[in-house]
Image 1 (spheres, rainbow, N blue to C red):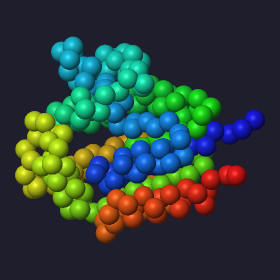
Image 2: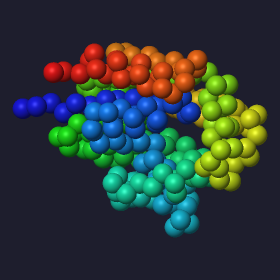
Image 3: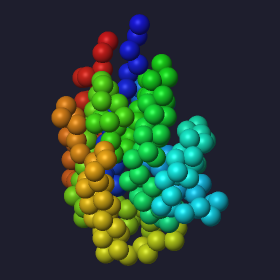
Image 4: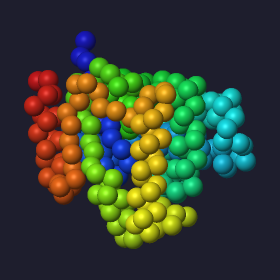
Length: 216
C-alpha cells in the first residue's frame, strides 16, 4: 500500500505559507487545501443566514455542510468574514468537525498539501514533510498592507499599516493562546523564517526541504 505524500504547512497570518503551499502543490502535482478557508466558510454561512456567531450547535451544523471543493477565496477573503472566522475557530466541536473533513481531504489517496495553523500538530501529525513558516509581525503587516493597496482583497478593512499590524498581533495572540489546537510548530517541523526572503527565495528553500524529505 502506497502512503499518500502529505505536506503540512503551518504559520501565522501573512507569513507566506499560502503562496508557498499553492506553489508546492503545483510543483508536486498535489491537491491543495487552505484550511483557513474552511473556518471562513463556516463564518460566511452563519453571516449569510443571519445566525449568531456564538451558537456552537448552529456552527457545527454549518461546518458539516461545508463543501471543501467549492471554497471561493475571493468571497471568503473579506475582512469581516475573517474576523467572524476567528470567533468560530475557537469552538472545539467546530474544529473537530472541520479537522475530520480536512483529514479526509489529506488522505484521499492522491496526497495533498494543506496549510493552516494546526496541520502538523493536529490535522496531519504523520505528514511526511512539515513546514512552519513565519516572519516578524512588522514584515507580515507590511506584506498585508501592500496586498491591500495593490489588490484590495481585504474589503471592509481599515487599510492603514498601524491597523493591520495591530490586527495581526491580535490574531497571533488569539491563535497561539487558544486552549484547543493552538498555533505552534510541530516538534519535527522545518522552521522557515521568511522575514528577509522574497517569495522566490522562500519557495526554493521550501522546495529543497520537501525534495530532501520526499520518499522515492
